[in-house]
Length: 173
Image 1 (cartoon, rainbow, N blue to C red):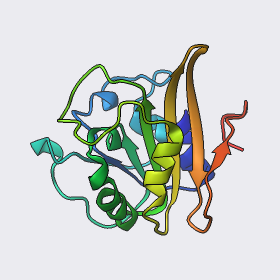
Image 2 (cartoon, rainbow, N blue to C red):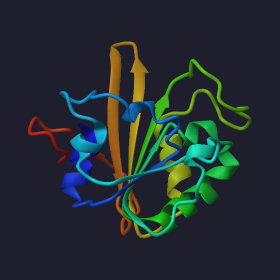
Image 3 (cartoon, rainbow, N blue to C red):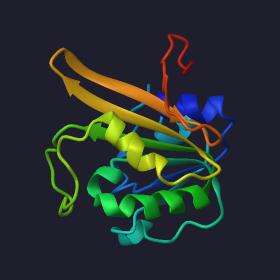
């Protein structure tokens, strides 16, 4: 529901799934009997350089670029270059979803990636490179009281991150 809310609230008509993986999330009808393509209601371009079927370089720009669990697989030193590329591909919102907790699977060597990063560490790293797109950082945090999704916004014209609150009408305020 979070991605659909961002698509609607920002008037996004296209989506780039940057680091889409095998695309398992697009199979079946996981969203109340609808596929993600139907549920989100916009054309989706899939990109993942590690998989030949999705390795074609994205062209043009996209209203929303979805980056799910990609930064956590990159060395910290690569984040500024990747984020600069995301800004070139995106004209409205970069939505970054990352788990702030130890991972169960290892995709690549996690050299330079602290296992105990907190949301503020991600915000500092992502703030280093600015562009025309707003950035929404969605982090799943495992705490003693439970598992939570926290959302933060860095507007392209602002210097500070602000928390986004999920409201009961299915959007952010």
